Image 1: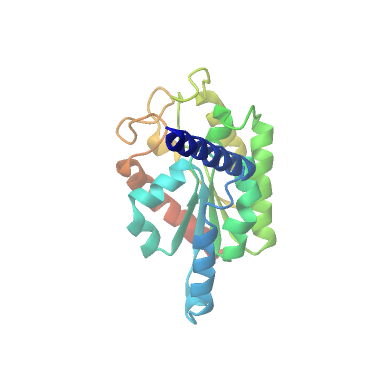
Image 2 (image 1 turned 90 degrees about the horizontal axis):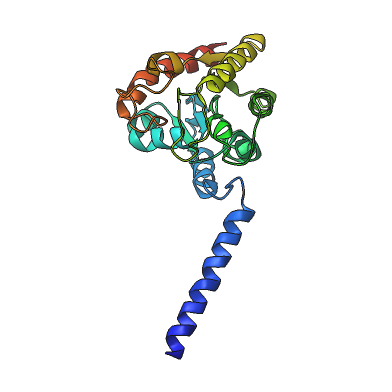
Length: 235
C-alpha cells in the first residue's frame, strides 16, 4: 500500500513539473528546436543548399495539419512547416527568430490570427493581431526573407469558443492584411474566397469542423500559395 501511495505521489510531482514546464515555455520554443538544429547542420554540410528555395510556413494548427496531411507537398517543394496547434500571433512572434529567421529561408508564408479571434491567449483586437503580423513581416524583411501574407481561412464558429462569432472579424482582418501587403509591396494570397460558403464559413466540401481544411481544402489552396511564393521570390 505504501509503495502504491509513493508511486502515485511521484506521478503527481512529475505531472505538475511537466505542466509547469509547459506553462513556462509559453511560445513553445521547444517544439521545433531539435528539427531546426538538424536542418541547419544538414545545410552546413550540403554545398547545393544555397541553390534551393527553402520556404518556411509559420502558423497554427491549420499549418501544422497541412504539413502532416500532405507531407509530399512540403518535401517536394523545399517547404518547412512550422505550425503549432492553438497558437496565437504573439506566440508566433516570440518564436519567429528561432523557427524562421535562423533557418535562413528564401521566403516565409504567414497564416495566422484565427486563434487570436477565438481568444486562445486572451482578448485580442484586430489592431493587436495586425501589429504582431506586421512585426513578423518586418523581421523577415530585415533579414532578406521574402514575405507571403495569407488571408485567414473562413470560419463562422469555433467549437472550443462557442460564444465567439468570428465571421465578420475574419473578413475585416483579411482586408487589413491585404491592404498592408499592398502598401508594403508584399504578396497577399487569398485563401478565403475559394473556401468560403454562403454563410461566411468554411465550406463543408473543404472542411469538416468549420475551421480546419481537409486534404481537399489544402489541394485547393496549394497552387495559390505556390504562385504567391514564386511571385515573392522573383521580386
